[in-house]
Length: 188
Image 1: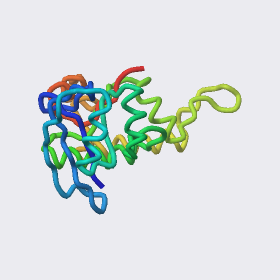
Image 2 (image 1 turned 180 degrees about the vertical axis):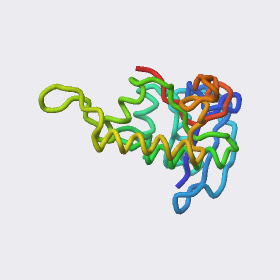
Image 3 (image 1 turned 90 degrees about the vertical axis):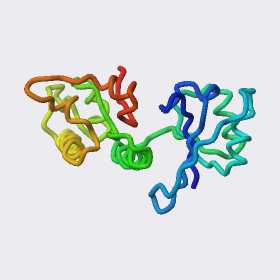
């Protein structure tokens, strides 16, 4: 499998169609076996999906992509990730990208309860029980908390954002903007 990521200034580009380069990753047995950085042709609607297909790309990971580009990729037979993807899967993929690119951390998530709520719910956490009362201590929440502990212990996540040091707090966005992390969980 070959995965393409649009890159601008050495970071994942937020605008797919105007990226200065694409990093192409060769994946085999769920591991990155090679990387090639290529310069795309000048922007022209519909050109990049064909160009990437010619390079053997079967999957694109992009920061942002318009609807038309998504349709063209679909027509070209190149998969654009969407739909349910577990946090365990995201952790595994981002660790591979971090290792291949020399990025210090795979993931970071803003340190707020509501930011953690989405991933916790996706792991089965129930915030309210059948009577509508808070139900924070349940198997889904325990599982998500264990994932967070494990990811901080194994270096997947930067401990300065959630754990801090001597009461300090580091903002996750700074790591993302400065290309120190592959995936940044933020927003509402």
